[in-house]
Length: 375
Image (cartoon, rainbow, N blue to C red):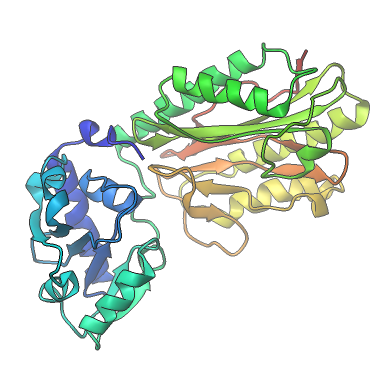
């Protein structure tokens, strides 16, 4: 996570986010929200604490009260420089003091609270000890849509991140693949994403030949050969917002079967995208894409969900999977990425990030979804 998000939004933007979160928590029957370091804290306040700290940092949000950030005294100067700091009251604590008692004084000791999914167990257990009558639920379970719907400024950042990933693909398709290790091509992807403005690169999957049947293959020392299908899946954060796209290329001319499988995945991806519209359920996107692959006889080889949300992280709720009945809402952003994975042979995946519009969907990735031939 980069600090660049803070420059994109004002204290008023963060104040509005915190007020909405506190209000939605109250509507969900919670006494408040407890937000630990991580993507929720960055989105709500613009503050990114040190990457590794055992000291308690906790944003306390309760309806009708000003938001309070409990923060170690030695980190308070950085917290005061965050873009959202003017909307916060800082409660700093010094080493040797009990931060959990300080946090407890801000809360209803018998209340039920939503807490960040990535909060340390150490801190959660200590809070429970300081407030023996309290109880907790995960923030994602309590407020799954908190970060899901993007405003206009966020959509602009998401669009720019998608365009940067597209520019990266247009460049990588022109490099030589045959005779090079997967890791070398992955390094090319990393450099190109950064050259197009990504501050963070989260993944650069280069899965050639039989490795393509592993959806999360780590690029390694396998030498790419002519005749290989190669799955490329890459993305990261640009100005605090995520990109994630997949295209499958072929080194030299593909076989008829390889073209057929790629065509099936391309049709499934189009069906998933066509299912995007306000009011549809997340699972409808999965059903539409999965039906195409199943009808073609490859159903057992589509082994993951059709999509995931994306925003200040590259994977977040909601998820496009059977059983997820959450309705699509304009401003939601998520991937549509069906695939077919034939063990020991090859794989194909095609992925775009899509945002829900007032009357359908809009792709944030616009590069060709045809099978690209590379050298």
